[in-house]
Length: 246
Image (cartoon, rainbow, N blue to C red):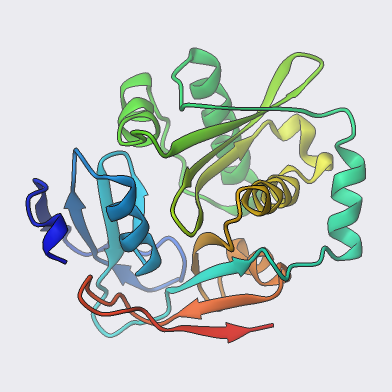
């Protein structure tokens, strides 16, 4: 698309490294660093399967593997299941605030506590994050479309949901929570909040990132129906074809 040609960007890719989703697999990521990305460009990239951390947009280019399928939820036709309705009831005392992404010691401490918990529970590889890294990945690059949804119980921050509000939907970037509040089903609840926010804004889609068959960490994504899957990462010149699922 010629209207994006004047935006400065740098393209590069990583070397192969251990896949976080499937055992005995390696992954390679293709990056496009765009420090002045507009909401319109971000919308077009996300619709074509890219993800965003900070100023970097990326997608996998793994040799001999095509397991990462982008998934998006149809908010206009979504109906919550019984278990999802229970998550709403559990959070009757949870307060929510939406604002521009921010950086505090509380954010970083909560992020690290969540990842230590996931290392112990699910075998995630633990890498402690510092203030600078958090700022570069979750605060920078938000521009006028990135937001954070903060969850509080009794004035205590218990969860942070990073999102982009785009032209046709909401892109779910990253979510983390206090393990002490695991019983509140905050991951499910945060997605229900995204769906409600999207509907109120007249946006049809929640872009959930990747779904990988066999990856238990992503199994929850298919419980939000109806949804669509995207195979591949078409260039900006080609309209993406999302396949309807229910």
